[in-house]
Length: 238
Image (cartoon, rainbow, N blue to C red; front, side, top):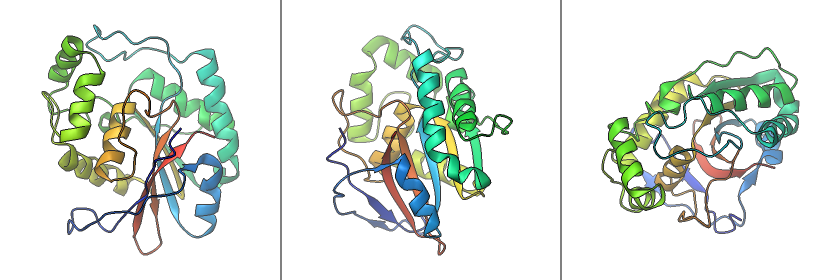
């Protein structure tokens, strides 16, 4: 579980860069809480991890670009969409170019009753993220050292071979994505490494390790108040 989650509160990140360390939250948000946030006049952007996929080979320099979802993954993404369906009147989708993220966004949209939803792709949600200063070097680092050791180094220190400095990259990713988000709800599908780094930078996640990781369909939720005040919290996929 994510029982150690904390909730982050910040204004206009990096402009000026004023960080307010958050208090611990008693529990993370879940998808069923999103409608309540929006009913209070907030907007919610979910940076959502794709649904379950088959095994990803560390030898694949494309990071599994064409990997599909499993049947269970597709069903879970549609079920997540059903939870969010009351918000179908003002939702916007965006996806990493990788197949598993595009398929996830499409399944969530179907679950919301929007089978023809427009789902633009955005490299910043995928291998074009600011978290990867050099995507091929990231591939080589993970191929040579495995996934977990470099990832824990990156989350813990903000640096790792091939990666962009974590907090600056988070600011850059958010500065790219926020102006593109104009609806009340955003479902922007991405990857576990990106979401873990985002939540870590925003002081809105537990210290991540193999036992506490971003689950399939888990999200970094950016909750935007009418005055622009932003809160950050892990959103569990239920």
